[in-house]
Length: 420
Image (tube, rainbow, N blue to C red):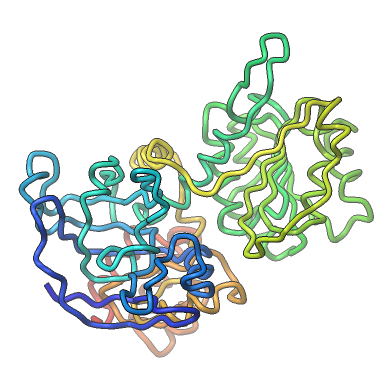
C-alpha cells in the first residue's frame, strides 16, 4: 500500500513524502486516516526532534509519522484481530499507550503510524493496550477531537480534595463548588468550559479569564452564559487585562470567597501565582498547560499548602477510559467538539501549520489527509467564496451551524475538494 505522510527527521525537519508501507503482519491492522487535528505537542516534537522524550534517538535515519489526534477507517485486519475488528469500521487511537512502561506513542515514535498520513499500519501494541477505540458517531472529525477532549476529561478527573478525617482523596473537581479556568478561551479552554457544564459532576460557579477580548467574545458566543445557566452553572467571562487586581476581581465575583478548583491553561508564571492565591481551604490547583521550557517554574505559597491543605496537580494527556468517555458523549451529541475548530486544511498544509502553530491565530487546525488545501480559517470562507464556488457552499453550510464546522461541511468538502 502506497501512503503519503508527513515525517519527522530532526529539529524543524518535516517532509511530506510518498512511500510504500510493508505488508501487514498477523498482529497488525492497515487503516485509512481521514482526519487529524494538529496539536501543540506536535509542534514541540518537531522543534525538539530527537531531544523530545517520545521521539526516537535515531529519527534522522528512521523518520516517524507525526500527528496523534486522528480518526481512521480500517482497511485490512491481521488474523490475530479479525474476531474483534472489521474493515470499514471507524476508530480513534489513544496515543498514550504506556506499553510495558514505554513512552512510545503514535504520532511521535513510530515509522508507520501517525495522523498526518493517508494510510497507516497500526501496531499490535495499540490493540494489546485497548487503545484502538471505536467511534460510532457521524463523520470523522469528531473522532479526531476525542484525544484532545480526553485530555480535558483527564484533568477534571485528576483534581482531588481531601477528606481529612479519613485521610482519603476524593478525586475530581468539587461538585457544586467554585471553579476557575485561567487563560481559558483557547481551543482547549473552550473544550473545558463545554465539558464542565455538560457533565454530572459540575461546578455551581465557573469563572473563565483571558486577556484577549475578541477571544472572550467568541467564547461567549459559542457557550453563552444563558446556556450554562440552563445546566445549573453560573458562568462568568472576565478580561483580566481590564482590572487592576485580577485576584480581587475574581473574589468579588464570588462574593469575596475563594475557589475550590483552579485550572491554569497557559504556561505563564503570573497565572500560576494567581491560581495559588485564589485557592480556598482544601482547594486544588491544576496546571494544565504544557510548557516547552523544562525549567519553567513559579512561586507557590507553601504555608497554605501546609495549613490550608492546598493541593497541586497536573496531567499530560488522558487515558483510554477518558477517551472512551468523550467518544460516547460525542456519539449522543452531549458535547460539541466542533467549537474547538477554527481552520481547515489538507495534508499538504501540515508542515507549515505545525512549525508555525504558536503564531497562528484561532483555535484547532483540522486536517483532511486525502485532500490538497491550504490551512484556511473558517471565517475566510465567505470571502473566498466570491471566486471559488466550493468555499461559497462551505460558507453557507457553516452559517447554518452558527459559524461552526459540521458533518455536513465535512461531507461536502470530501466530495468536492482537490484530491492530494
